Image 1 (cartoon, one colour):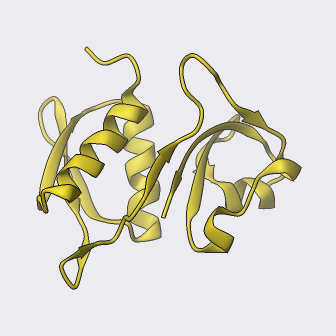
Image 2 (image 1 turned 30 degrees about the vertical axis):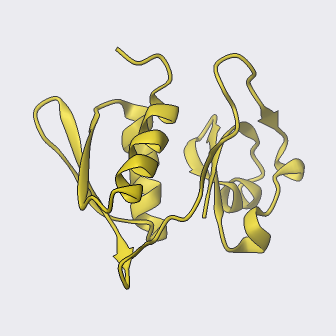
Length: 126
């Protein structure tokens, strides 16, 4: 069993893309499902579907290059990082996304700023 499911998801995606894999499987959790829904909505992955105890994630490639070039975990189990909505940074000058866990659920940094809600700064993706 994995203690940090978000870091596990990001590592599985990173490793699969280095090997040019088309799809990966990850354990089902609410947090992972929400992150994958954000990644799909933002266009970083093709699709994901639930199988018995796992999620099947179809990775996205553009001209044989991965749609995701960088995955970075910010808040870790040992050192949690919380930000007010005014402190939310722009990732790669607006080209990337940040994912926050707020009281209103998981959302991108841009959406959290619009809703004026801060929270735990989970990761950056571009």
